Length: 441
Image (tube, rainbow, N blue to C red):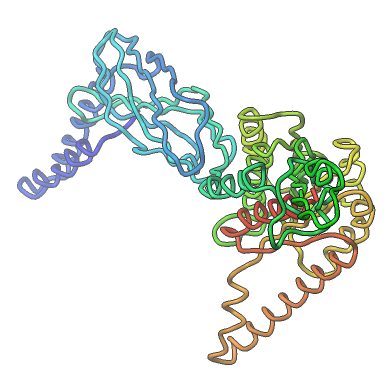
């Protein structure tokens, strides 16, 4: 039985007969009357357990976006169902409003619409729906919680997609619009054209030059027009991304976890590499493979990536870097770009990573993408008081440790790109384009 504010106010009015008649029995009689009315009112209320509830709405939404969900309420009782309904979604689902008025005639159905604005990635669930049915006198009612399971998968935001058009424009310049002039391991012959001042003399094709001139000419004849070869980045190369989901990925920087920043970088790089005609495989790993996407191309690639990434949260344990070379071998057997999305902190926490790195760099082009904390830089510059000086010293030490680890990665044959959370995804994409332009991929 549920008691309403009207009943409390009615009981409070019992003070009047006590003051006027100066008799406690008057107040007891008043309360007894109120209890009788409350019991009658609760008995006249519709039974909330007679309601039939159904959910409808999308099963996916992107983080920071909103979606409408509907709860269909069918009144299976013979009385009018009046009261309040509450749909108990997880707090991180961001439901609004949390409670709504309900008025359903007997035998009819009404739709209760709410808005979800989730602020956390993953599976957001709802279990119970609570209905409080109020009697006709609004003094009391009945309340029941009914199990109505519901779930919605909150996908990564992919805010870095705003950088994709500019990087695609640069990719088009590399891939056929503006051919590169230096041949590398990741370039293939594109076309011939006439030599112009500034071209690399190593790209001159002497046979094509002789064919164009029609063979050696007589002495004194004008020199034949030199022909040069142009090259373009090879297609169908392989990009392997390993995302670290260990304990260091749980740290929050600029209001998002390092894992979320790694996901943003992976999505932007995957979209760009796929448009370039390269194959992209992704694995999320700590001590086991938490998620894996292989063999997908085109629109199916991003769809599988966001669906795989959505439910993954960091595990509070150390990542087993000794298992990564075998994981990469299971994903590719040819020379590839291997991107390791992991933080570079103290030498002690990255000892396993540094010991494993030569096994990858001997065969693959290895890039370590690490997010940096902008708060460290601001703390290092603030020396206004004694406490700030201590914080600045600690920040300087942390940055020096990160620089030492980055230098060690480069000595072991890897490459490093570091940036703040918002700048890391485009920085990784730019490094990929630089590899393409230089013929390293």
